Image (cartoon, rainbow, N blue to C red):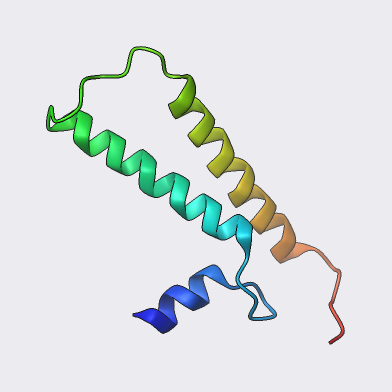
Length: 77
């Protein structure tokens, strides 16, 4: 489990990517908020600016990760 999580968060060079960590945390928080609101454990949030911000941050991080994957830049090291 630990190895799989490390592979999920690592880039091609084996270094943990901060974009992937931030995206995973944002998606986790969005799922948590959705579940809490669904089970009525949390009052529905009237001002959705925070939720919108989490969505945009996760989209930008995931887009940046996918662009990195297909970039032609190779690190020599």
